[in-house]
Length: 205
Image (cartoon, rainbow, N blue to C red):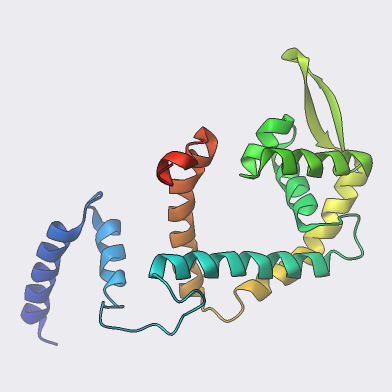
């Protein structure tokens, strides 16, 4: 191995990184930038759903992946009290949170408010969750799982991994970690926009 040649090449890469990187410039950012260079601008990716820009293609594939995941979850939950994947997801989040208000639960799910209220209403009707007075706010109420809800979510936890495993079944552990890192990076950007309801600003409206 030509160690000195490798060091020289690394120095040139660091210089390129300093010029191209617009965000933070630490070791993790450098490694991420270096990994992105594996796919060069001259490489063609056979991924054409919309036939438009790479951004449109990414959005289309993310949307399709979400629908695949939702379909798999609904299939494995057919014999459970959950009618939809979102009923299971809301219950799972509430199970982890313990007790929260309706609006807070919907925000934790990054979900549309009116649709989220519909999910919560159905869960209340099925006695999977229940409302109780907020001890810190006499005018407010909190949500928590019922005994039936705890049984239902335990059943869901036994079945849901089959659906989750299928979603990324053809990826290696390294690819899964890389994908998780990128998805988290996207979520870190979009979640504050969702919370502040400033989508129109970013959409140029």
